Amino acid sequence: MALFIKTKTVAEKMLEDIKTFLFFLNIFVQGVFFIYYTYSVVVNLNRPVFCIIYSVLFILSIIAFVNYLVTQKYPKESLKGFSRFLRIFKYAVNFSLIAINFYGIIHFGGTFWNVFLIISSLFSLLFQIQIEVIRYFIEQQIKKFKKNQEERKNNSTEKTANVKSKLTKIKNKFFK
Image (tube, rainbow, N blue to C red; front, side, top):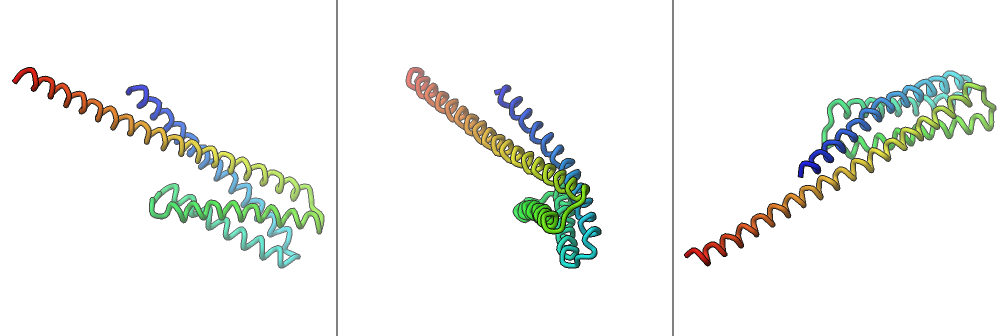
């Protein structure tokens, strides 16, 4: 039984380490995207449609990021689904920025910085999503492990109770 407790503790510690790493990675990736949004808005000041699109995406990204920080600091189980939606929405917004900038590079040409920012943003976003998926699967495995451990504990308790019951019956039968 001690082995299960140690394994559970190690798995929970690993999950907490991954969550901490993911938190700092998320801050770093959003920093890269905030620089990218700012750059995209400034470069496209002479193209009002692109400027407005980038500004709206920037505002949506800020809202999603602030929500992420707030839910990390003050997690509430009741808002978990909404927070997950905003996190996925943030990924969609960031991919939209990359897609629109890619379209702009193809049709209007791009500078070294534009290409550099699109590539670094894309790689950092994909890396963040990959770590998020790994975290999710580890979290699911830990939940399964805890459930199995609880079932084993319950089965062990039931078996012990059954053995005690049988021994009591035998004792009562022979020692009346």
